[in-house]
Image 1 (cartoon, helix red, strand yellow):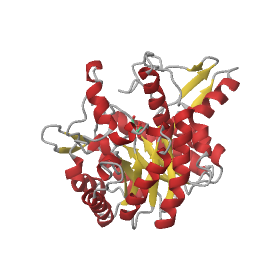
Image 2 (cartoon, rainbow, N blue to C red):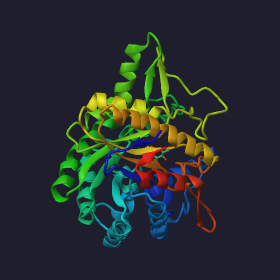
Image 3 (cartoon, rainbow, N blue to C red):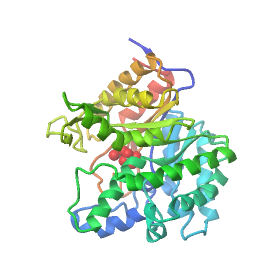
Length: 390
Ligand code: GCO
């Protein structure tokens, strides 16, 4: 059976600055990697050296037949100290956008992907009184290089950011790391305020469609746990989806699905099929995530801004992605407005404290930085060229 996707559907892959650029010395993740090294947290170090090799990365993507590239700008490079902006770094990101456009890749630009300049944390981070204004001051400068960009994501996974920062706050208060934490609304609220302030700003000075991207956990209620499920779903993702009501699109990011019982989210049980993240192999999660997002947001167009699998077995990556695209196609056939699919990730990269979970369509030698495309890259490229899945 051949399943065709809508005309103009974007096919691409995604990355994030800190996971691939290398040597982001001035952000909170770099500091955390060093502070938490004794717990086994690994260093991003040179990462994939994509700060210098972005053209090679993009060329591999375009040559394979894909037509979109999602990447992020690094706030700590653009604004190394408060209110002081680096024109050279802004010019670097402009070159990235021009390189993408020159290769026929539609750039999908994320303005914030998990990292903050160190000075932002020193001013109180997202709980600081001026956090949304400080973010907007950076966004205003970032907009100066966005001419010709059609898709902008303000903040990546605000819900995961609220989860991580909420957990770190509890650790700083002397509690053990809360592995079962939900996103902390104290962080969610300023993030929502920042998005609501930044989105119209970006829209007014660019021609981009503007939205943000939400980590969707495809939560499913255990029998009898409907009320708990609704409460967890609200705190996990719906409050962030609600904030996208006036946006031009919403990014859906989906990897796995989890059950909610009367106690909360059920941890993934050990299973030989689990991915290198320890997550259950659930290619159907993408369909659940898209349908739930549509239920909450009605006609707001959807872009799949992340979906993929951490595995050392590339055949498995192809199988997972093919299944996920089948579920996505079903949702599209049911009339849900989906504009594109951006696979996570283009490269094997720094998975936030770990190098082992490999999500990439391309392997990277971390001493020579040589790129070695995997069969999944050519496979996804052939889906993109056909705009169809066999
Ligand atoms: C996130 C980020 C990515 C991750 C990916 C796999 O969702 O956490 O957007 O940076 O690497 O999701 O965990």
